[in-house]
Image 1 (cartoon, rainbow, N blue to C red):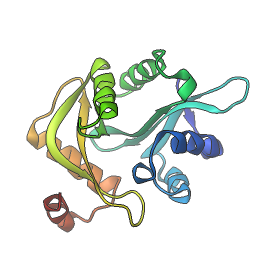
Image 2: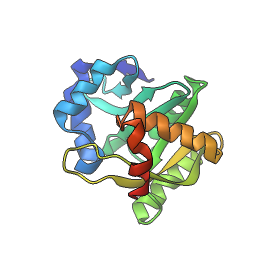
Image 3: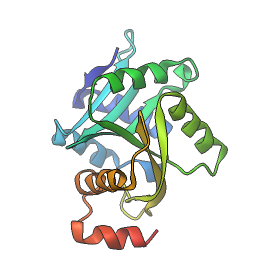
Image 4: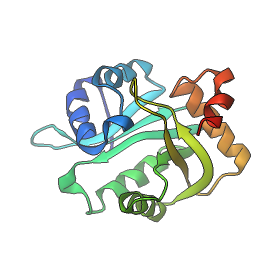
Amino acid sequence: MLQKLTVQDFESIYRLMEASFPPTERRTKEGQRALFENEPAYCVYGTKNERTNDVEAFLAVWLLESILFVEHFAVAPALRGQGYGSRLLAELSSMTRKTLCLEVEPPETEMAVRRIGFYRRNGFYLNEYPYMQPSLAKGEPSIPLLVMTFGSAVSEQEFLQIRNSLYKNVYHVPKEQIAVFEQSK
């Protein structure tokens, strides 16, 4: 079901990304396209409509040292609520032996609670450690989020390893700024 998407699919991927994420949760169009240059560390898996060839769903992931980080996951609105996303997550989890993780908003809104519930039903655990997602777009603020991991919760030490890997490889936070960055939350 999942196939590796390429930069040739980018316009369709980005249309779905714009429809699914607010500007603070995605890079600029140029910045998002540039991530394909990080392959094989960054790749996008998804499904396409057989008739139109449009991307119907995608998981943008980072294959890091010990984790597989799902940076973006979107399903076309017409396909939501039908088990499609659950099937894609199950397929992705079967593709790796690494710790599968993703970021979610704290359960402070109805949508955030629903999203966390969806991931919990699909085998993810909410780790309650404080975490800040560095800004993805210039001029945008950092975002307080939480990290969910597939299969089990993680210890604080494991969480710090995940956080540090994300800061280094995905968000490019200099090592000497991590402590300062985390204190700003």
